[in-house]
Image (cartoon, rainbow, N blue to C red; front, side, top):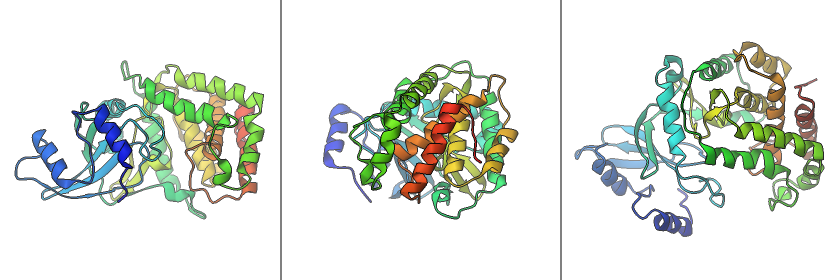
Length: 348
């Protein structure tokens, strides 16, 4: 299993000398969890494995002589891109999210159980979803996304956005991180990210949008809305990597970007990824027809957020395993920028 470069480990230990550093060391994790009374003296971690592809946090499946569970630790960087700084206290919003939805039977049925959290060590432990996989396979060619799982996801968002929440962590630092990589960085000329290293010619294609003042003006407007306080609790990263299927059904994970915001953002991100995995007009219309909208809902904002999400996935750091030619990406960018600028989702 891949380990972080030593300089990052040293950075963490220097910055947080009293915090436990989660690794693939079974003895160290056993000692830590016994000290925290999460495990008794007779329980020992026998094996640690990587449960899936995570972006933000270091995540392991701990298998003991009695059970298994998932351990997550936030570090002051994005785990997949450690050169990118990230707020180390991001578990606060994630654990708050799971505590809120625990009072709702439908939402709780979609979620792993929060078993333990420790803010001092930036650690949270969740029930193990077992043999499961996320939905990132949808980005592969000729994959089919059926109505049944989509309807479940729409029921989840409808219920989530209807919750009456009076107080929730502002999650400001995580929103600022997301804001930078969705609404700003992908549209900055000479931002230091070599798109031609992703695909020859992509940098030249991107230049059109990085120098388009109308695109910059609209993404700035949407970014300001994203940073403002809204009325609905939103997941904040509702894409195939946050949906997991196991033998009991679909689960929704990784709400570290959650906050009180605009429901249109979650729906826009959902629609963007449905489009990127090849779903057509009928599926996207199905979303808009079956999602139960809050009274304030503005379909124009959905188009803007969806267009921005598509563009940032093609032009920003958070790349997806998309099997597209350069010509296909050009076609998609034209479509997405039209959604963004014209406040309307048009597929035909």
